[in-house]
Length: 388
Image (cartoon, rainbow, N blue to C red; front, side, top):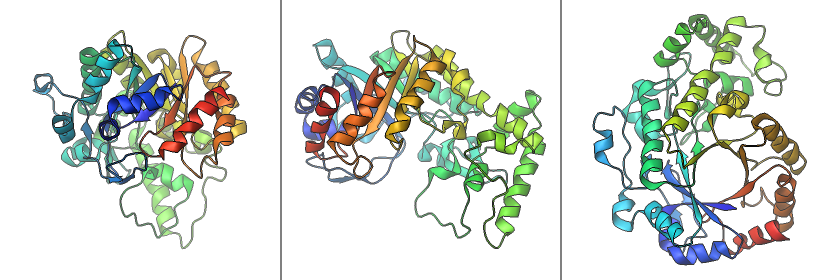
């Protein structure tokens, strides 16, 4: 049973105080943000930083510069690691003295700082426009960055597990600061705007015999038509409920979308190979992750399991979703269910308890989001959800 946590929250609450508070709720693992993006965070659970803007696209452990000397894309150590401490190292030390297990919550390709610095390695639309917040999983440099990150964390620190967030294509729908959309984008438009046609994807697809150029032309045509309409009108009724089948009447595009999971699957396989054998590698997954190129049946042999985030999943869908994941992964892989403690998404203690109980037939554990982002009193919900 784990709680996602930021190192600055452990610092401000106090490591021992935070661990004691969580242990009292039945938590035996800390999922620490080890590589993370930025945002404006309202932090009622942090006694000092009530609103916090994390440094963008940094890692929260002491990097070894020698490992990255020849890397085209290299991590940046967050300034607070030097000023406030390496909390990954502290948690590993605390584990050795009977403390909780340690999981490294690792954001992979979602990195605006690196995207701005390396525009040749970001996701690009069919029109060639960059999506700076997402490095592309087809880029060799981006792949080397992510595998190097996992190798460094797992071999130097030996965490119990690593949780991979965003090893796939960051879609257009991810969002950005001060967005402007006067068109009224439909789901199909958002999806097509997130399909990557960067040089790395194009070359990789061509080598696989996929009609990448024709697929790009198709997406350009579809988007141009959407941009020209006076009012939005669906070209693919039923999407996204129909999934990739919606594009079956566009054979070149369908072939490209079928190929699109390959860079993601092979990257996760390379990550598992790069990780220390003692560290389990889990994919952070959710319903609808095919949107970003996740093919769970293909990925299953290449990871040790999943953290299935059911943040917005209806209670009656949680059990079936996790059973589907279990059927796909098999009995030997780990399945952790992820739930947020946010209100009004979770209405209260009883709502959270129902969600957790719905997960238990198939889940091996639960992750709760997030230590600093909710009031301390809301952490009490965890014990009731786990133990009734």
